[in-house]
Image (cartoon, rainbow, N blue to C red):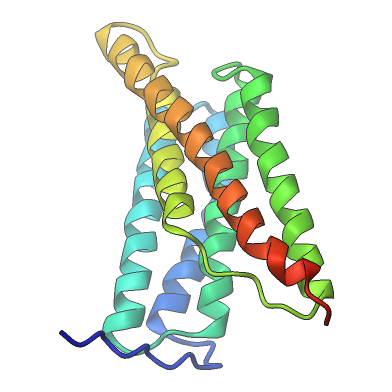
Length: 194
């Protein structure tokens, strides 16, 4: 069995996947405003679902159209982090999630910022995202709309609260586990003489 060849990474900016990522980025403030401004929760969930679909689609198109780019490799995780940050802050401001939940997730991002900064100072590129990190992001991006819908009333709110918190707690665990994996991968590089 042969393994697929890695596709080349280009310096192109204007590719279909990058345009989708730019559109995703443009909707981050819209998403945040929908939650904290008019509290249009259903509209915010629609924006988040559309973001998730375009996230999946930009990666698929990048591979299928051979349009993998350095910019796309940066835009995609930046968009994920910004949606996560916007959702966390907005849900905290609305008292849908407790602030300890926000702090635990932001502390993980702070830790990862320090590790990546140290890698860059040692002239290493950021390490590839691990599968646990991708699973954590997907799990958290599932929990946010469910928790947002739990702010309502009735059986839908009860149902979404149960599943939203299940995804949230799994997401926190996976998020930190991915940070441990990434840190363990970075450790030998940072300890080796440059």
